[in-house]
Image 1 (cartoon, helix red, strand yellow):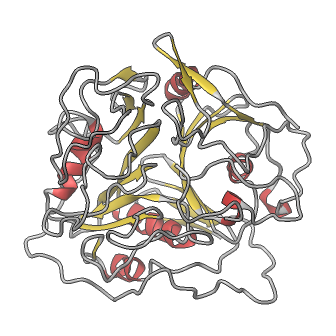
Image 2: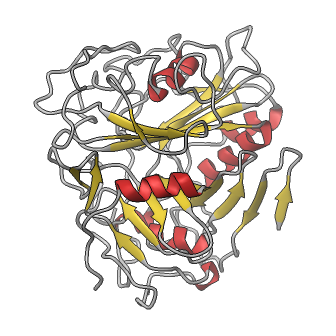
Length: 435
């Protein structure tokens, strides 16, 4: 959903775990990096963690006791698949069931155990029998280190941040050895606490139990397991993207574990002066991309270029200032040549599930979509991509910092033919025209 305070201007390193990281084609810096050091929130070296921190237990869960390498969840909008399909809502992580006029917590999911999307049951996020609820419960009711970030906290535990802060939301958790998981979400105002020991103070911390109705339109969730080196890579990507968090607030940051992880976590919450995206291959094979706020290019054209110029079909919160569909030959003036050449980027405006059409535009109405999902439509790779950023901004000047062009964010790409085919079927429908 739109940020309530945002306007339209809104060396390769190989690790022992198999993760590889490289900065992508360093850019020529501006004469003065105006945003360098601009703080989003105060930081501290470390919070004092609870004793007896768990180790070796963290993994994405399909349900309690069923670990997987990764999973993806697509929550439908309330126009296509309303409510919970008959299941009763609950608030296991705090809050009260809200009397929303429209909502949906019905969902489809895929995982490393079954790469094809399938219908889920119950209210997503409310139980330990669905991937979102089970994985979040593992962290929230466990005893781990964590960082939570969200540019739409709406005052609890911190204020909403607009550009140039990162347009990114999620949770990273790790054990005493540094192994952990990441949970990417597209939901404003959730999660807003990483532990039952430090609950949210003035609002709920369960889906469907938050004053801001973030279960009205479609949303997506993605989680993957992380080695210690992967956790380091994700923290660096978060810093590059200028995510909104506060290392001095134990509600959203509990720091500890290996010293390099502690140092990186303590440095979050500031606007990065970086202008180079990063690309990292995690030990699970998932490719992680990070866009800095000061790389003022259309987000999904950047993704295409960093993945070798693959053509993409993309669904996001697509509304003014919308970026239209582009062909491979479309001129992109807001661009950094060292990125390479992007392929075509087609904007999905509708999709399909179980014979029902799903609206995929950025409408603040029951049929709207706030998920950020892409799929490759050609070339040798078959990517499914889960992102932080909407396809909003500008293709060409004069204002290349417009909207999402001037924000940072993360993207997770999986080269997996069955998953990509399943996501492509979900996004099959109408699309926006090219200019």
